[in-house]
Image 1: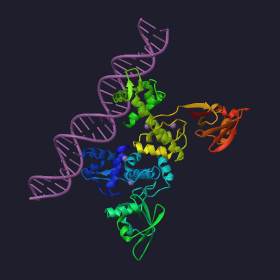
Image 2: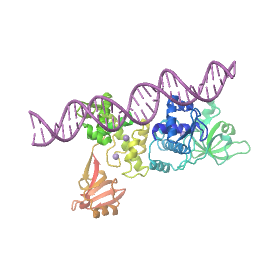
Image 3: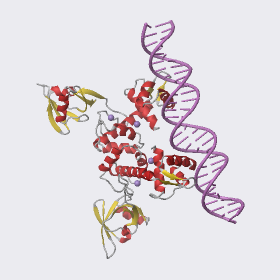
Image 4: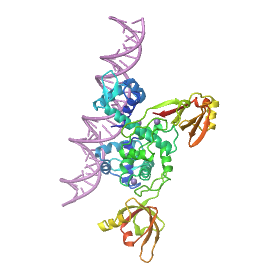
Length: 218
Length: 218
DNA sequence: ACAAATTTTTAGATTTGCCTAAATTTTATT
DNA sequence: AATAAAATTTAGGCAAATCTAAAAATTTGT
Ligand SMILES: [Mn+2]
Ligand SMILES: [Mn+2]
Ligand SMILES: [Mn+2]
Ligand SMILES: [Mn+2]
């Protein structure tokens, strides 16, 4: 498979929201930053290769084989993102462009050993799940921190309240986007939380917890 | 620069033995596993881009700019080889194909941080020197172990005597191609050597040392 | 020095991925 | 249901990198 084919397959996968949804030519063109006519050409090719199901004017879906290919590319993309953040000190928001290139490197051994080197991570720096070698993975969902069950872990992916005082609070307490947060316990009385972040235990009020989004799996 | 252009530049660099030598169309074609006519096309393009000096039928040399580009690709290739061996448990002879792909990833930060992650290595798993970011590096030479000066380190790259008894000896003493060997001391009397290999100190006779090739720098 | 062998370049095609412009099909609006 | 709007496909071309076949230049051998 060429680099371009792989990018198309991955985009069809994402636009199809994981599996079924029919994907339109225009939507693909926008994501690929190309023209719909070019997409038509490529879809025809992917269809001939058995990667997508396609009827003219009716949109495309991934075939079973196409889904397998998509998951392997997503796996590689996310593993490389973990590598960049964990081993090379990249931040959360710098990894995408490079991972977009690295995901196309062809070597089964490389990706297996990278997985091992990273300790078989389950989620990437954006909180998205990493498919296993055989293509299985848990769905991830976005939840406010105060709705995350005790014992769960997630990645901080956003804020509900983006006012300066709140952001200042987060900064002072060294809570940043991309941080992994583990919910240790919850106080019945006032809804305050006991969390573990970067191996440090802290307590935060319900007011704080209800303004922080976490991405968790399962 | 395209992937293909980069591979051509790198091959011209290697065939020109580091710098000056004029390189023939046929030689490039053989290394690139392509036809001489394709090489002619590409040379014309590289010449127009100012990467090589070229007069029809007279062969090519790298321009100053082309040399800079070549060294940056060689740097990337060799750093990735170190990564594969040191961090992902690849062996000596498995790294080339993958590094051939990784060397084309475009990100200055990536390669700087990889360099740091690896501890700024000076030589790759084959004993070849790694150019610095600015393109400087020491030349490497192949020497019989008994001719390596005390205090120097090198990579084991070959044997002079390839008879079964000698190979068996190497195996028993856990000396393999790709191993890094440091010459601690030399006994005047019989020429025997005290070496450090994988943090273990051993002594070997002059007879052994004169049948092992090391690649050392400077 | 000159013919033969070798090397290198040109000419003309092919494939991949992309483009613009025009035609066709589907969807939305009256 | 007819027409307008939007989405999609087709037609025809282009640039990059390759190929085969043929022509041109250089090198070799006597
Ligand atoms: Mn990509
Ligand atoms: Mn991600
Ligand atoms: Mn390469
Ligand atoms: Mn090497």
